[in-house]
Image (cartoon, rainbow, N blue to C red; front, side, top):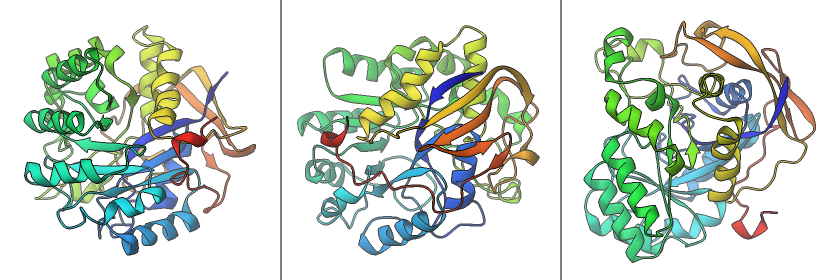
Length: 358
């Protein structure tokens, strides 16, 4: 048994408000604890999207009453809130901009709205971007011109990680994340998963793209699940929405990579605790840690998971390294499959500034 610090997932979708049949703050944060995460940062492409004060308050109220682990909430950049969303920055962990296809209506079109959002958003609050290919190049250029740090979500392709490497080499303030599903799956896995269950954004890429992510891990700042749950029936339907659940499999996958010598525990801690906390200005979670059995071998089964969506793309995979207990703020929150803290135990980390980190 070893102890890791409480892990932070900087990219999850908990589907509340508007789609709680898929997930909500209760089930999603229970899944987080079961996966070894003591804090999650929640995306704004909900129904309604989190783009103004009423929608943000709706999400905050749900989280306050239901969340079992700590959390932060992103605001969404839309075409009609350029002039107003920055006034809510102190209540959010960052601003999320969607420049490519995603689930929900928050897709920005045109350079002007991208420029204005980046220019108006406070420089001490992160801007996170879903940007692929040419959209990534545009976002990096505008962030550079306005001297704003940019966090690139779920990098998935060889040319994108190469561009981010070059950007970092010349000293520009860009950070990025990769997901376990882009590290462990490729487009070759889609026939086995099924067309609907293989739908995700960014799409599963080639083996060469996956290998480039592994080869450039020194450029990657964070591991992020992009936990994006949809029900089994939705994924198997005629119009399957994109997204994979990931909170309860991510750590097992990464620990398996540690056992194979592809990662070190320090690599994992830096990308799943140290860097997310630094990038998003999160406070320390005192008396918080995760106890891991590094020798435990277990088989992924959706039937034993806490997420509401009832499926996983890693079904049947055997992983080495398992969460046994999670302690959050000196309280045992999870032990051997059981969630031990009530809904509402989680705290909102969004309002803490970078200057308050110790």
